Length: 173
Length: 339
Length: 127
Image (cartoon, rainbow over all chains, first blue to last red; front, side, top):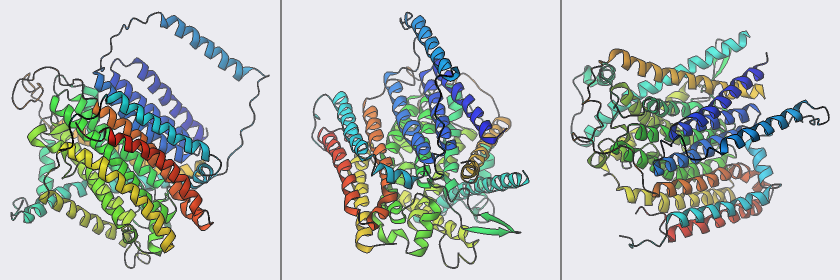
């Protein structure tokens, strides 16, 4: 077997396993840990696909920053131990039904002759390199880049409004 | 296949050398710290174990192996055991992109000195490993199921993420000057010109301060605020698990010293390094030694910051300063036309 | 891409395994060599010698949440800085220095509005 294929199957197993582990853990912190493992695996997927920059960003932002926030929120709420029954039992059959629909849909797309996937263009070797990303980001994708900052601003203001109801009571010491 | 096997052997040997070197470095950094801090405080320091006390770290290490480890009954066992590993492993792995030298000719085989010198996202790798290294601490704090540990873990985590921003932003200057995220490339650019500390002195200072906070060193050593938090996130740890935290902390000191040397002080650069590549690791070692000495000096002289001031300093002083550094670096390129 | 992976990333994986082994040896050695004489007293949470009162983990202040959110936002900003820093010189030497500087300036100024707001609201202050 090709080394790429072996890497893919090992990673796939870990990714699916960690996702299932995340769903099944009773302790929310362990769920978060499984999710971190899952993000790390996805990062390695990016790496295998030849996108090291995105891979590292995945680790830095998702596994490194967003999951810290998740852990903080779990600890903030003291939600390490969720009740097994949350009074949402009616969701289960619907979830199962939707899951089956998704599977059938995916199977249809993959197996049917009518839906044919276009051949994948093999990108240039340095396609995912930082320089290439910089060049693309600051020319072709300039507008999304600038709009991102507005998005970040909105998130920042939102977080502050939620957590701080009024101006600080005390002046600086 | 044979070539692959040889490569794997080469990597394993280099990885083993690095891990062993860092472990020895850790042991002797503790000794260095005790001796040097003692000198600064007009004491003598450890001098009984072996000639001049030089066997003290070995004795300490051996002792820790024979200590009892106990786990609190209420602890979350798996996370409790995982946390020390999660603290120590990133500290070693982050060193993977630090070049020790150029390359040597080993019986006709070209061996690059370093684990992965030419990684094209090297600096980003540093950032991502640094951002992952908070988990050991937050997990240790939570899994101990102890109030001191919880508070200490949370505080250290909040501190680390706050200063990580200044740390990341002070990487930008060297990247702009070198035009690359590749660590080896950054060093080559410095070899052709001058060390970046000349152009970016403020960035070097900001980096150093942020790095001190990132590795929880004095004056930012909140987890060791004994008076208020006992021992912070490692209150409940003992024996080898405790020493893994300790090891992680000291290896991180070595790692940030190495990063500082690479980004601002030419890394392995020094006289004759291009003719004798084996001088590279020596020069890097000397630079790390000097930086560690400075850290110990700071610890021996500075009082600890109060936590609210520490956070305010990170957000209100370090962050604007490090943003200013980016502007500075742009100005350096424009006005000095640095290559 | 396998060639690139091989030379650049496999050594890191090997180093990761070596350091995991290192940690494993340390943990295992401690387990094997250290005494194990546990008792109920020893297993209690340490609280300066007093009996531990209440659970060890409890709800924590919302401030930590705010710090984490602000961290994510500025961390993304730092990430965006990286490709910008890599291509800055290239753009400058092609006479596009003002252009790329302006692009980043727009990005940063919008974020600095948020920073100023956070400062004004006292979100950067601890308590």
